[in-house]
Length: 432
Ligand SMILES: [Ca+2]
Ligand SMILES: [Ca+2]
Ligand SMILES: [Ca+2]
Ligand SMILES: [Ca+2]
Image (cartoon, rainbow, N blue to C red; front, side, top):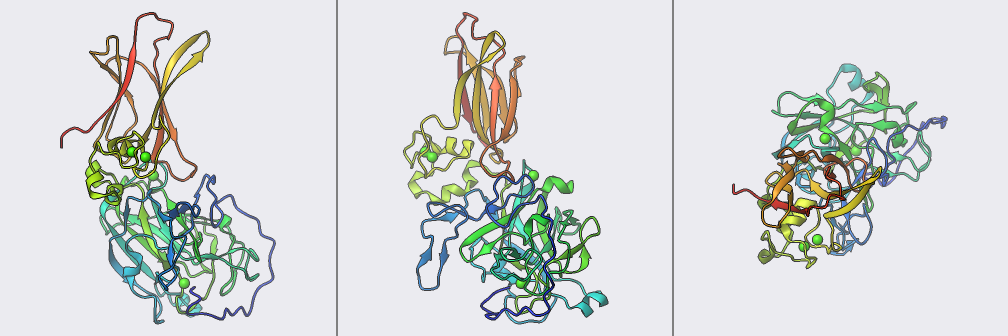
């Protein structure tokens, strides 16, 4: 719904408010620890995580110093098809779904809503298919994020009462060839119809787009993990509107309810689709484009934090933000039983495909031998007959995002052995 087209919200025929059992899924905004679908902020910066930088139309900006979340490496670039299900005017230009998120809830394309009669007749629901220039790979955690224009409603109208999300939901389908699509398995535990312009409790909804808030200054998107579909890489994402009458079902054959029926910008409103898991080389790293032209080399250090650009890229850091000394790589002593061992910790962005990372040992600082190696963004593996203990885990405060890793590599040779042993981390970019 867009209030520009519907300045008066009508809520006739509202239902009584049922007792609602909340599900385990994420809230409408800023629920970073949720293990299912923690929403991903479209913007970050000094005005707060998830606070959109929006042109208010007079040349003034809300949250002017925030920027689009640099976690996103690509945005939908083409619309392959767009079939709206109603004939309402406005919000029918698919170009509004392309390019970076804006946080502007009017910068959308609507899929349209179906009437009860049309649902009975079997009219198809509105749908749109978007294409990415580079494939999105299944890396750790969420791989892409969908931004609709839901908002926290102050109206005590729907199934979850005041403070629920005014949500228009859509099924999400992905494809590697633009022909064969696989649908994410949707879950909707909303117990009953919420009426036109009613709200839902988003903790009852999973694997449907449209449950998170992206309006009036708050900008959060819904994460999707390609790993759930059995595909390893995709190029197309299709959204199919769910008219929330209850006629459309989730993966457990439960009725899906959302605000229904809506007009003007009826049904799902797509604002943007961002990719996290787009493999990169240093030269393709989108963060480079935001640096001054003479500061884009591998060795340049525009933020003067002692970490050259190639290392900022390798460690998933920001080349324009000063990182504390020692960020990205450290060594500590770990005691196991009666003995101590050196353990190395390093950061790794899984999307950096062109790097070779070697943890190396030497007894004389001249001849170095590799203890463990990571290639093409992958986990470290033991080398040359060494048997270091290796583990890795997600790093960062967003439970849905997994591409940023922290590796731990523990040498098996005790510290107490008297022979000298030096360590270094080497990050190289083999000549393409
Ligand atoms: Ca709508
Ligand atoms: Ca994934
Ligand atoms: Ca730097
Ligand atoms: Ca930095």
